[in-house]
Length: 142
Figure 1 (cartoon, rainbow, N blue to C red):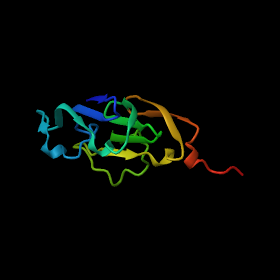
Figure 2: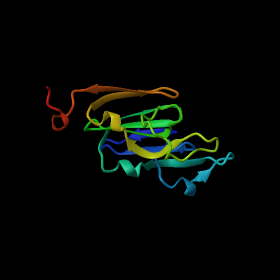
Figure 3: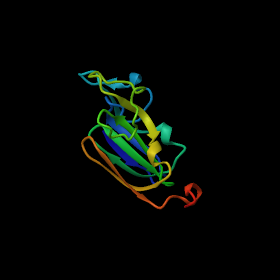
Figure 4: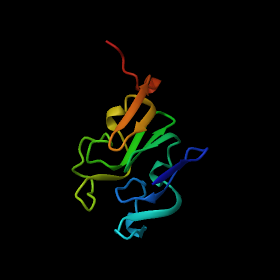
């Protein structure tokens, strides 16, 4: 899998997508490799992120992270080890080995009240660094 970020904040992905890590909705229409895994030959916009201006991206072994210019974090791809930050994977589809995956970008709800400023991914983990919350989401102290 490969990803690229354009100057205007559009995210493109291509390569292998067997675990949903490309973020494209219609994987059934993609070409398949010899193992039957879908792949995208050329860079293609991740349409579900088009309403957002993406500022940073990171990739793990089979998952992808995007952070918007407003500090919102979106994840997709393999999720069996919790690397996506979505605690309930029961509604996720499963790959051929029975492991859950999120096929399209989804906001990480636990970080909604925070502004993510940086991320990093490992094989099956994700890190997020947060900064001060945006003014509209700060809660009064008390």
